[in-house]
Amino acid sequence: MCRGGIWAGDGHQLNKAIKIPGNKHSNQIGKLIAVLIALQSVNPLSPLKIITDSKYDIGWIRIDNTTLFKATAYHLRRADQLALTRARCHEPDHINTYKLAYTEIMNKSNSTYKRVTISLLDITRFAVELVSTNLETDETIWRGCRNKDLSKNTQMFIYKALNNAYCIGEYWENVPGYEHQAKCSQCPGEIESLEHIIIQCKNPVRRTIWQLAKDTWPMKHGPWPEQHISLVLGCGTISLPNKTQSRNTNVKKDTLLKKGASCLLRILISESAYLIWTIRCERVIHESTHNEDAVRQRWANTIDKRLQLDRVLASKIRRDSKTELKVRNMWSKVLHNQIQHSPNNWVTNLEVLVGIKLLRPSQTVETR
Image (cartoon, rainbow, N blue to C red; front, side, top):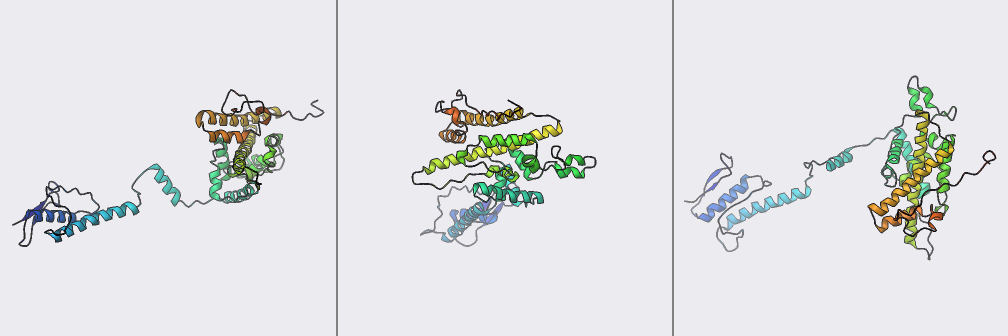
């Protein structure tokens, strides 16, 4: 008489005492039957550790008990195949990490834009196409808001502007007692939209800042683009196209120069627009006044700060030739007169004094 047993734990429901049927009994048959019934009883995806002192291997050629070996091998391979299939196909939604949760939310969310935002996205894509010759999608425009060439303040400014999140203009027409704030204090009768503030307002501060940006832009990279609010909103996606190449032109060098020029254009447009917005808020909210010399110096300090940050990035943080070349291609045309007599390593050598210097404004009869 041959018997087998399965013990899974005290009082466990899988505990079994097995009586082997038939007339052919042996110690090996008892162990094989116990393993087979254990495989049949548990979930095939549950981990199962079999401990035995048997010297048998799972094989059935020219040995006794071939049928039992085949049945046992079938269940082992079935469990292994199910586990492999689950590992390949099952979605790991049980893994609760912030990254996976955020990705899942973004994939499932159906973003619906406000009507104003849809309009701004449309005019932005076509304005950028005039400069870059690429028709941007909604996704690339939103991604451009986080372009690393833009400072954190300008990134947030552009993002809010695309969402029409600023309380200006028509917003105040629906607030009793504050309807007068909907109109521009500098342009009688004009509703103060963001486009009006950045592009159209008659305030001399706006004209001064855009003129400084235009004068700083190296004409060797092409003409200064005509300013429009949509170009400001899409400045993070601007990429200047390469011109038609001649046989003697170094294509790689020209491409790197265009990348540097594109970065510079993003900085000039974004920082200038954000400074116009900042000064407008200071004038309206804090009733501050700004003379032309102070505005010119403030703009120069803003752009110079970006230059020095890029130099620090190349010399102390990344410290690689790729970053140094990018900074050189970005600023060398702007600093042409200064770096002519400066060491070649002016990008990484912070002891070399280079910076944004403003040209003196043209004299009028009153200032002579």
